[in-house]
Length: 154
Image (cartoon, rainbow, N blue to C red; front, side, top):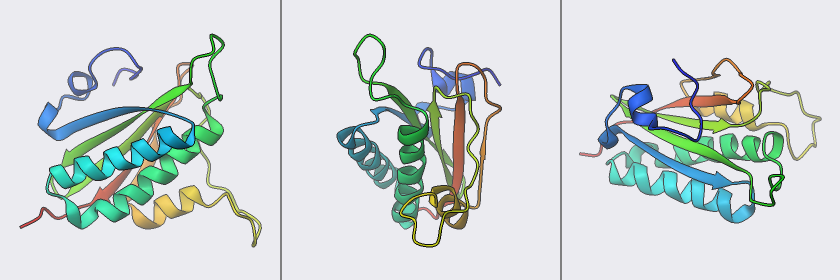
C-alpha cells in the first residue's frame, strides 16, 4: 500500500467509499485533541455504532495523544501548527481507528514506573482493541491503527 500523507484521497488509496471512511486533521494543542475525540464520537454515532463509541474514543484519545507527544512539534518551521490525521474506517463488526503522523519512529509500549502518570497509552490501546499495529515507518511518517469491535445499533 502506498504511504498515506496529507495529499490525495485516503479513501481511494485504501479502496473504500466515503460512507465507510471519515478523516480529520488535528493539531497537537489541547483544542485540536479535543476536536479529534469529538469528531470520532460524532462519526461513530452517525454510523450507528454507539455500542463502541466509548471504547473507540478512549483508543483514539491514546493514539492522538501519542502522536501529539512523540511526533508533532508545537509548530512547523514556518510558524504554522503541526498536524496529524485521524482516520476512521467502518468495517463489518469493527471500526479501525488510524492516526498518521510525520514521525518515522515506530511506537513501542513502555514499562512505566508504578506511580508514573504517563507511559500506559499503548497498553490501554492493546487492552481495549482487538488488535493494533503500525505501518512500516517511512521518512514521511507512519500510521498507527487499532481495531475496535462494534455491533451496529438496532
